[in-house]
Length: 371
Image 1 (tube, rainbow, N blue to C red):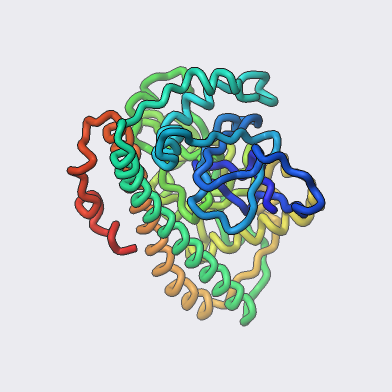
Image 2: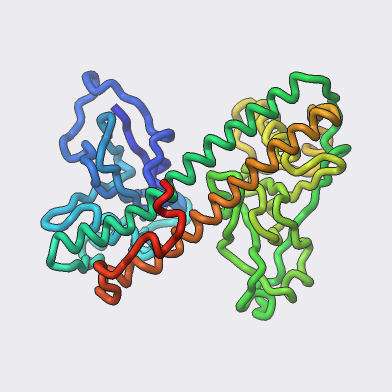
């Protein structure tokens, strides 16, 4: 039996890798805590996570239950998949209902039940048709994610194979340049208003190889007045404070704040920098003996030893990795486009502004039918 907690509800999906296991025979579970297919899960408590929403899949391979940190909503008299999309569309509003101190907030269940007014077409067939369109987009996004996860594993395994051949051990600072970031003054409107330059921060890290979008953007004037360069696509980003130790690659040219490092290869390709930094983070975590990282500093990075394959092996890996990284990036760009289409369609379909019978998914994205 899987027990879902607040860590399992993120990115509007249920992440069972964060669930706990319990012997269902040894633990008495209340019926209302057992998750049914298409139940909607809402984080009841958390630091910055209260109000996050996800929906259980239509088929559950195991028994799921929730702990006290997760609320369960179940459809009655409405298509459950439609309700799931409606509630997910209100996530920002629901997050705003969390009450309490900044250290720990808690959902006000009464407000959730009374202030979120569900609107829906009377026809269940129309409800299901709307949900099916949105679900088709999500299925393609999920397929891209699974493909990218597989490609990322291939990249890791190939690099491990390279390290088994002739290689050398050097301080990281000899083969990787460590660059810092900075934040333009938030009080200067011209640095931020209508900004088009992605501004990367630790909170922008996602569970994928590339980071394509950021919560904030700055202007060219803002870039000229902060301590960050405009880092190229493929630059490796490492979060050094806040969410510490996350590694990603820039999916587009972007600046970054002072809580991150940008890492650029000195005679080694970015595909190798990405793999090397992930191993450095694991080494630093091991040295911390399980303690929570407070921060990563430049000295720790520069003096950490890294294994660098021989030039011939390095070139062979780079040629292999570049093709896979390009495919990963294209898949992530497509997923971002599809998610934007879904988010635009959702309120228009639900309000009736767009007639669901007039929507042709193959016209929305030429690759949607490929899955």
